[in-house]
Image 1 (cartoon, rainbow, N blue to C red):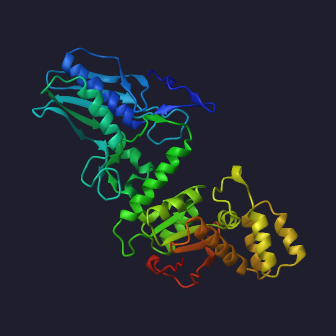
Image 2 (cartoon, one colour; image 1 turned 180 degrees about the vertical axis):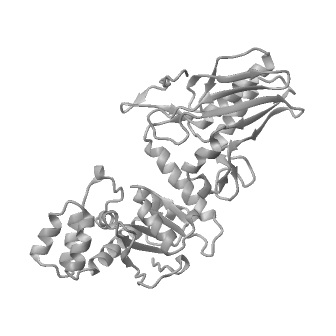
Image 3 (cartoon, rainbow, N blue to C red; image 1 turned 120 degrees about the vertical axis):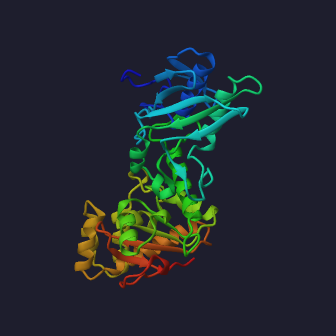
Length: 382
């Protein structure tokens, strides 16, 4: 692309769209197959996306010989933050004695090692959507009875996968070839929710002493506490960001349980108030909730006013301790538990732990207690 960003997919909400690793793989595969079959070099290739749109992408590093053709497409995620953006997705095409398209992976493409993913264990991490695109684009070039082998690789894949969740999901050795629509929507909520669903599915499929257990955390604070204090396997920990409600309902629909919520006091104060998307755009009841719970636990009017004047929920932690009102944290946990249980339909065993920014358990429901526990002993209730 000569360093210029691709803009053929246009903009949404003022942000530039991009295209997935799946689209890159399909375009590179089609380019390599066409070069090999025609014996002529190419500079670009047009593919059809699952939604019917046509997309023309430039090809890079094209080589052609009697035995194979090779070319690459550079991933462009648009304005979406993506650990694979800018990397090359490479395809090689060779003749095959087997009719049709035979697809494999190569260096930098991960292999699936656990159940719960769209691709079974032992297979290359090339998801069903991209597989269909590759088979359709390349298959349309073949004569009846003709066969071609397509190998997808990613020179930077092994290094870049370290910044993704692939190792935790059981995908080892490289990146995944992903994409449902073929398009990357910048900061796509749908894509993020789909990734949460995938992580929950993977957690459920993980072989553990407590089958079905899922730990939902907004971010690093909960994950660190679970892993370091309770020894929870990282494969069971799902980062859901602000999408608490979606993650809870997904767990309920998949029959997960017990489900444990571990997160900062500010997050669970919002959930205790009935806010199931904790992004600031959807509301902020942190200090109001803490003040109300403090009042219920015996705080004076002056103390309630002071809580309401704070800029951050974290600043309430030392004050409540100083006032000997640490029971407020467990009350927040209990109310977050009640709200979450109702949101899930009331039938899923659930536990909530309220944490400080340092990952200390401030309060919980059901009560965890101060003694160190294994994650397998964490209490839950419906």
